[in-house]
Length: 287
Image 1 (spheres, rainbow, N blue to C red):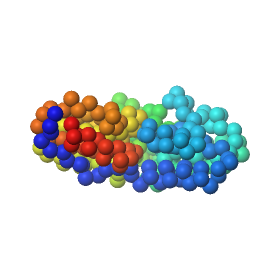
Image 2 (tube, rainbow, N blue to C red; image 1 turned 90 degrees about the vertical axis):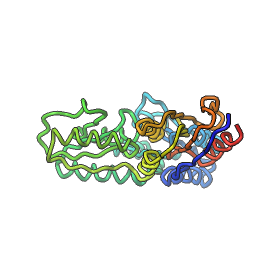
Image 3 (spheres, helix red, strand yellow; image 1 turned 120 degrees about the vertical axis):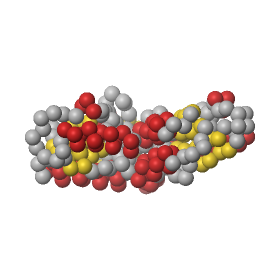
Image 4 (cartoon, rainbow, N blue to C red; image 1 turned 180 degrees about the horizontal axis):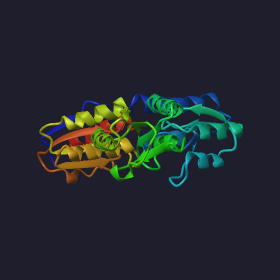
C-alpha cells in the first residue's frame, strides 16, 4: 500500500488542559513519594497516559457505572487528584469530610463553564446543559442542582420551564451538533440566553477537519473513551470524507483498510500524546 499524500492536520497533540493534568499528577507523585496518590476516575481519556501514571505509582479508581461521588468510597487515605474533567461541589465536600488531601487537575475551560453555570443558578435561571450522559465533565454539572437539565438530543429538551433559561454545553461536543440543538431550544424558548462553551482545543480540531479538501481518508487518533475524539470522527464523516478511521495508536492501525494512492489526513483528539501521532505517520510513510 502506497498512499498519494499524507497531511498532518494543523492542530495536533495533547491540549494544554491535558498536559496540565498529567504534569500535576506526576509532580504530586514526585513530591510525595511515601503517600498514597489516587486519581478519581481516568485523569484523561487515553490508555497510554493511564499506563504512564500506573508506572509512576499512581493509583486510579474507575468504573463507568459509578459516579465520582461513589468512586470516593474507594479512597480512604492520602492524596486524591480530581481529573481534567472537573468534579461537583458535592465531591469536593465529601473528600474534605474524609480528611483527604485534594489536588484539582481540572481543565481551566471546564472550571470556567462550571463557574458560569453556578452564577446563572444563583441568578434564578434554569440551566439547559448539552452534554453526554455519564461523562464525568457533564456529570459534575448536571448533578449540581435540580435546576440543571441535561440535553442529549432534541427529544430531551424539557417543556414548560417558566424560569429564564440559560443554555450551555460540555466543552468537548461537536460544533455542528451544538448549533442544531441551540436552534431547537431557541424554537421553544426564544428568550433563552446561549453560551457556547466548546473549548478552543476541540473547536480548532473540528474546524480544521471541516476545512479539509481533496481528502480520501481521515485517520483520527485517540482513545475510544475520549468524547472529543469521537466527535472528531463524527465531524469527519459529516464533512463528507469517504473513509474515516479511528485508531488508538500505530499498532492498532490496519493500513490494509487504506486504498492505494489515497490522499490521507491525520488528526488526533485533545487527550492524545503527540508521539502517537508521529508513530502513525511513520507507519503510513513506510507501509
